[in-house]
Length: 224
Image (tube, rainbow, N blue to C red; front, side, top):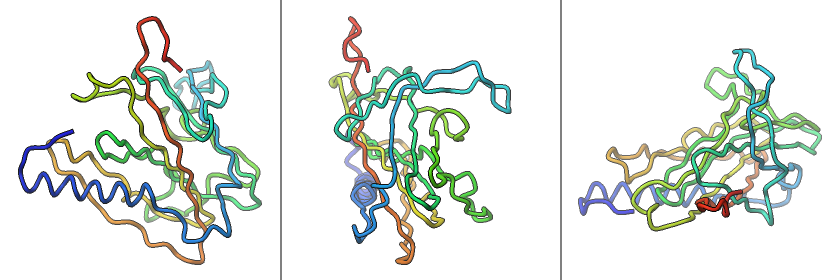
């Protein structure tokens, strides 16, 4: 994408790119304790079922098997197909989870999931319990399903795009809300913020899943 040749707009893009790449590439300082090896991750289509939640709304449920192939997932960029995730903790300790989507086309970072009591007054209880599953985007997980679409001027020239889902897991409470940012290509300047310092006594890890968005063809091919 492009921005007007104005100093403040160019600076905003450079700041956003730096923030985006730093958090996308950020990894734990040590690989001695790899929490990612203790968590199984599945990505699936979801659909509305007949069961109602506490607000009398139909709950979403998985409607496909695991779509992750060789560490990446291909999705239909039709702004209709809904997706969710399932995380399973195979470790003996409960884990805290944050999930973000890094959009490479506009440098935005969107929050997919955060702990329900992640605010300053929250108790910091982990949501991915030992030996249990956490539904994301369906069921009682507390997050909405994900949809994908190609938008903006570049979408008329491209039939696919790539972004990344980054899943952070930790055995201690941590606050990552400042990772999110708006696209610097929007009219308003993005909210650029810093990052949370790591406590060396708290373990954390992250899993990166490439998301390949494919525009469905008229004959139905290309749809996942």
